[in-house]
Length: 267
Length: 106
Image (cartoon, rainbow over all chains, first blue to last red; front, side):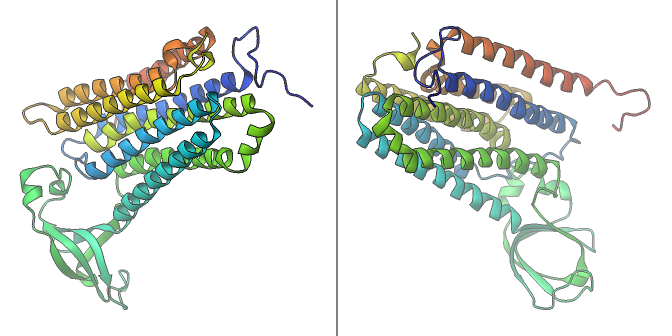
């Protein structure tokens, strides 16, 4: 069965069906991320003074990811342009670049997530706070039974507020060293996962949802680069439209990151 | 005719992409620079950074997504989207200062 308007534009809409479909889908995506950005503004504006984190995310890694995604948006467009000029070799090359750039983005994101999961804030019995990356837990470490020790690479602060803004001169001067803490001296120990505070919750929600979009887009692009590219031989026009539609999705994912990066990493 | 229906010159696309990437690079650098500016309050910094981000988004949407030369229906879909997003965000923010008496927690 031949599906109409997969290549030719419909006379009433002026677009082929998939293109109208992807724009409607992107509109719903704008609503989804719009809701989450609104939630972010709500949480940020409602935070107690001095209790919203600054400098918790690695700006260098965020910048590298921004450029990787911008480059992948460009290679996606060039892959489509290659299809338009009927150069299948160039299409293969540029789409392979997109896949590699997307995987690099996800690799860096995974590293950032891992870094947060091994980063602990430990409330000590004397009222101070130890903060740093987990190095080692002794074999008998048990927080409930209060046995064993934990070693972190970090520092100790008097007030929890000192951990909130890592861009201050005092925070930059803090000397990080190996600290061994007895379980008996620990009141509470928690890593910087989504459960840590409102900032990490919204950060993991928004960046996680964005990463899922990257993953989904990569799978589609991989399919079109690999097994799906068979269509090039039978219906190159329709295949080119598929590349355009997947490209529009990919550019949208880049657009979301263009706002996510400054909001999460820079403000 | 929208951009995607015009005959394509691959070289002109390479040139456009180079300009867009340079634009994204400059915009990203400016955002980072603005975020480290001393003597400016948080609202000023956020305004500057988000303005630059909007310019960055315009480059991607306008040139890479061909939004500068799309069909009327696409603009209509986007106009509705913008309307509803503003409504969604606006109502949420409005609700921030509209707690029923005795229920505000701060």
